[in-house]
Length: 84
Image 1 (cartoon, one colour):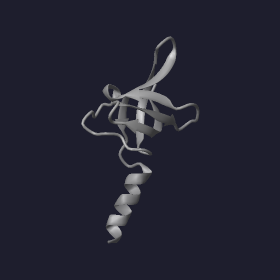
Image 2 (spheres, rainbow, N blue to C red; image 1 turned 90 degrees about the vertical axis):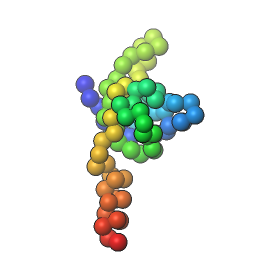
Image 3 (cartoon, rainbow, N blue to C red; image 1 turned 180 degrees about the vertical axis):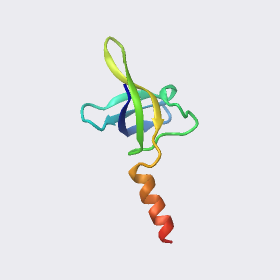
Image 4 (tube, rainbow, N blue to C red; image 1 turned 120 degrees about the vertical axis):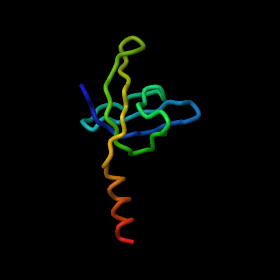
């Protein structure tokens, strides 16, 4: 099942971060290897789709993260560029 959330944090030196589910709940951890576009580093407040997987004795982690185009931040940037 696909979920959506926003990046809460990402530490490029460690290669892991957390994502806050849109529907509420605790932030889920993820690793760099879980990103579908590994060449791009996620930024705080970017919207991603993801799936969950249970690891480490039942703890849920976010996997298969994919950046969602058209999130609020991108729209604000596009609007400001169009205005001049």
